[in-house]
Image (cartoon, rainbow, N blue to C red; front, side, top):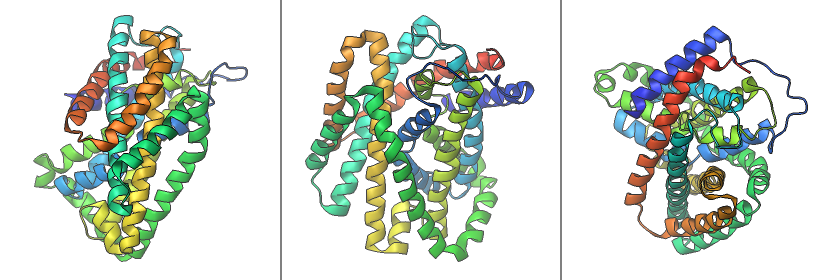
Length: 380
């Protein structure tokens, strides 16, 4: 249900963006807000660039074949339209009463509740579990050690609220992104003679019987949708705090985040896999770079996981404040930090199931609201 609704909303958003030629461009001189537009981009990237950019892409290719990459790109284009509209609407309907201003009050309460669950599950425990597993396999670090270190570092960062989070993401997101881009490009360059074949397989298998049967198409679109989190509504929570008054500028920030996350990062992962003639990121890096390649990938997974934990902490923090009161934020920070340790040391099959459901329950009301309000993106 989520993917069809996402695609319909994306088409509606695309129509109104073309018809209205984007949201009104408003001068942002003297605008009030807690964070700059650039900081909102870095926090958004911190929350969206996660282990799914590495593991999720290889899963999509292994199940759906190279054609899944094409449909991942299609989903990203729809996602850029949705993200533009939801973040522009977040500025148009900004209010102190709820984190996503364009949602009705009662729906907003349900949205905030599921956001808190998603933040602790998908944004926290699942990420710390991936990092702990990577460090254990690659460097022999015990999972409980990773859990303790992550727990302490996360609490130190989020204790300062949005200022502590943005101070971290302003520095770490560019460093993390550059590390993975260089690593993936190294694999691609070494296997450069296979790049034409990789692109050919992406396009030819996108319209194959395997794709039409649900493999490439379904997995590619699902990967593209979940990678950038367009339509989930989480990034709007931050956009409303941006110092810009321009809905257009904030909408472009949202679209840019999807482009970087999916079109750039996921594509690099896909090309590294396909150029190496493999079906998983791990085997591609090992085959091309040897044991060092595996360690590089384990470090990348750790970086991505940690930044996602930090980025998602803000969304849960804001929803806790609106739903339960500002005083409860201190308790939330402690619980969130403890969840980091818990996620690192336990099996998370249940957390995956709960997280996926709560994320979908966040997205459904948000997509419906965005679809019906997309024609307002010219309104100031």
